[in-house]
Image 1: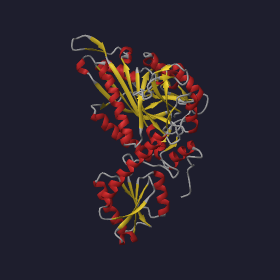
Image 2: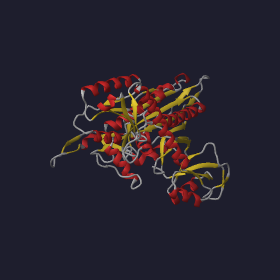
Image 3: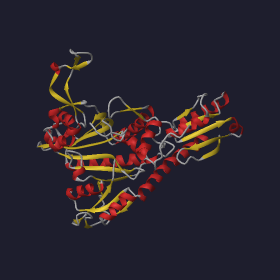
Image 4: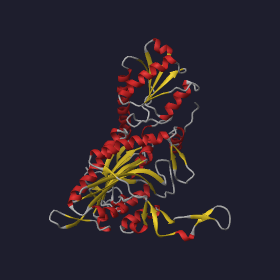
Length: 488
């Protein structure tokens, strides 16, 4: 197979687009800004979804589903919320088409204008809190711990597959609590769930922190974030959890009677991750030969390739190995194609990021061994047939750990401390990554740094590792440590 993807060094953006297309993750669609998620890309998302769903249910959450369409008036009930999403909303004004009386094709039927226009879901706080008003009357109805898996539409002007599209898939949790402390604990707990998922399953190290007031979710009192570093030195916001206070409860008049029969407004959270994680996975681990997938999320963890072609003897051994691997809950594929050459197949599976490849030829069988190739390091080893399933099981864990450690080393090597604006700019321009600095806590300074460097505060360091001193931009007293980075 000829070289099909651009080098990361030559053009990182094109490299990413090439992998998405050539590895078969997604295609462009006929709708501007939307993508068709192909089986491999959707398989990765399904594995993410399955694991996250288990983690949510293990922490007491249940799934439900709410409408795709939201009455426009709902968005105006929470001022910050509508301001945050107004420019991204797709609005439905009519409910029917008709044949064009002046020619061919169809036009909107002017008699089918909606009494109230509908917004296509950009996020579900408003429709859900309107519903919660009917579900919550007493403290006995709380906490309400609900998640939904859905699609949302945000009318983005500049799109990239998975990273930013007009329509994307995600999960959104929406919980209701009797006290402020319970709601904050919920938001913090989900923050930890996201970080654990990113590191344990995606093998993607993250930095946990809080967003600044300027970067918070529209309508939130606090936003917790996990920030990952991609191989081009840019940050990716990988998941957020929001403490909403009583803002939405007050907007939709959601009250409950406490144990003393006193009426109180409910406390709320919301939280979500999306198919953006698939893009993050690509940019964290992949190389110039294609996709690299962590075994715990790979749709196919092991592929068995007969060499040079399948025959009865090789397939018997391959099926026996496959059965043993499946018994260990390892997903495996046997390539039974007798048309393509082994070299073509090797390159294709390398492009698709299959973590382990087993090559079986007649000469190997004569020696009671097979060739094992690992995708992360491209190393090949001859391994005895006896106990091969345990060898592969251990190897998959080793690959998972190696990918995390490799990404963490890159991330750690790209965290710089800046004491002056010159140091901040130098680090961003020459090295990229995260730059720690002291911040005076004002949006004015935050925006001034963004204007000068194009970098944003990705999160506030909750441990304040730099202590106190002077803000590198304003020179004012500063007692907060923040991480600046250029970001997706």
